[in-house]
Image (cartoon, rainbow, N blue to C red; front, top):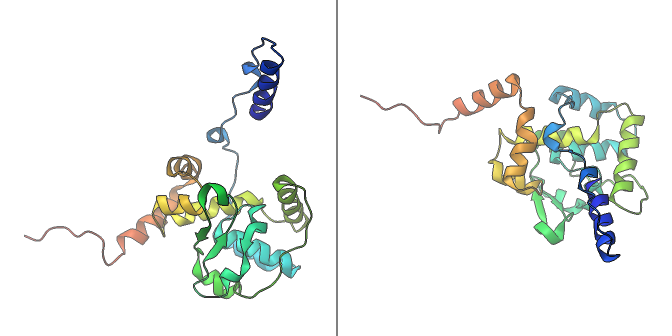
Length: 211
């Protein structure tokens, strides 16, 4: 709606028509979308092993392990996975962010799911990113999986226990503030407990002074 209003306003200005279309933009904000129920890590694993098609199983595995979006799946360099630890290189949004290297979270999935094997991705057609993303969403529904975007959200939350926010934001092609506003609100008490245990059990965590 916002893009449509911008285009219509530009056209009206070019035609020298005085009209205010601002009220048609709506009040959409990603901060208001609170109806998403994310799968647990255990559910993600079950989803992966339930997919009978090896091409779509690989696609699901890459999206779960690297947090890429449904259309970004078709902009990755699969050869970058051949050498451990399996950093995935994405060329999506290359003009804005450069070629991005994305870490696998969890690295165990890289081995257990054999993501290093050079298996082709599903062959789909589409004139634009929206078409490509729709093909992925359709396949996920066909196999009874979660929504593709859920895997990206789960990666972002998972990353908080592994790497700094600024690094995770860069890997997801976000600014850090947008990254935090978008994903941190999905953290629940279980996530807080898990992150606390990870940090408190680190050998290099701060220690109290000795008297």
